[in-house]
Amino acid sequence: MKKYISITVVMMLMAFAWVSCSKDKPVDDDGLLITDRAECVVTNFDLVGTDFQTVRTKSPVIDTTACTINIEVFYGTDLKNLWPQFSLSTDAKLDPKVIGKVDFSDLANPKQYAVVSGNRKIRKTYKIFITVQP
Image (cartoon, rainbow, N blue to C red; front, side, top):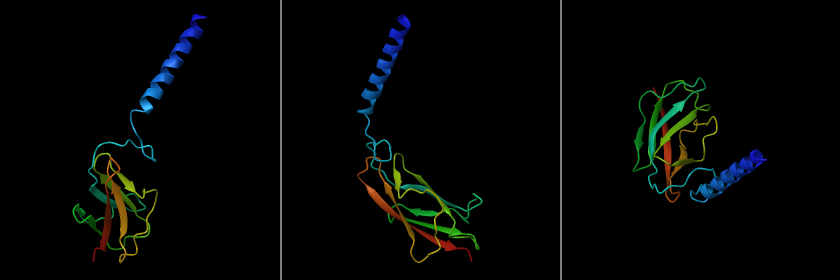
């Protein structure tokens, strides 16, 4: 009998802890914590090929004021099958999400990704300009 009472008490305590914690911390539609942080910048960027190796020839140039990323890739890179990799400021998120290969072959129309701040109030759209090594 004591065993059943102790199990019931433990289950009730766990349920209480779960309910009380879920109201304290707001989350967005992706289940990510919404914080007070207003920063939304790209801190690093890379392009990875189908072999999971970088295809950039040198470090990217990230302009957080103009919201641009300039990157040079090796000659012969398959621009239709690249995975962009972003490093963002703390608590920021990327929109749209990167869920697979991206086609960067239309160099005249650079891809755009928005970085959304941790408080979800500030949104900066970055354009990615790719040049192919001569």
